[in-house]
Image: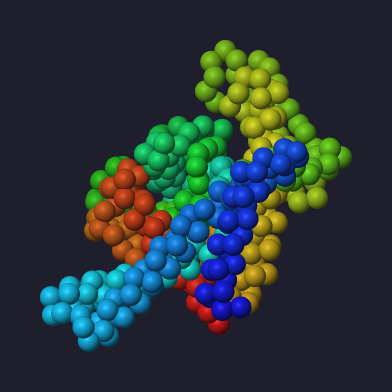
Length: 359
């Protein structure tokens, strides 16, 4: 099927959905909801197709006008100028439409579970992990998302060993999915008297948040232990068995939760994280199968992959997947310039998918 025929088919489907929904003859609420979502998803694509078709029609009309020997010089000059403008716009309209037609990641609209862990580098790695967590919290605030800390294991010197947070909002996974991997920092620690630059690392995992219906977990596959919480918490600490450790026996995944005073709430949070990790494990397995046949890939989401370096002495942030360097390390760490990296990664991924689609 030609590209033009595909566009005509999409417009026809959009019109069919509009007529079906406006007729109000659908009795099944689930069918109505399904068709409404399809119509909503298709509407921006239909509008982009119409813009493209209108531009192509205007180009044809102007070419006919210029081909007419009766067209006077003033009109001919005006038509020539407008024709050049429209022809310059046409490739961008086509490219924008092709990007919209790329297969969507089914998880793009999901909320996420964000996990940050200190890697190599001792106390400095813990401080960097804490800085990364603050960066994502700040970024979530700038985006109007809600960020809820689920669990945090602190080092006692301002750093963290590991932390997890739930980030909810529109299109959260679509924006944060490229952040999974090893983040490396090069800077002079505050405790370093000689001014020597240290290199340390932290790992980030961005997991789509899923519901019970997305991941079915058998009760017999779980080993659940309760124990007394440790760390901050006042008199409550070491007085009740509120902390929860859940082990998923088939996969060996272990999740602990102790931030809440209620054992029930800790178990609920632990199950949320467990579902996300199981879903992500299956997702990565499928991605690896698809990646085997792909020539290019922006990032597998593998948390062992070094994706980015934050060099404070030089004021730069380098993303190694797309060879992009920004001299805005402080703005990135404040979440303010993170969009520049994410936009570039998204564009690179789209370009790779367009290249595959053209083959």
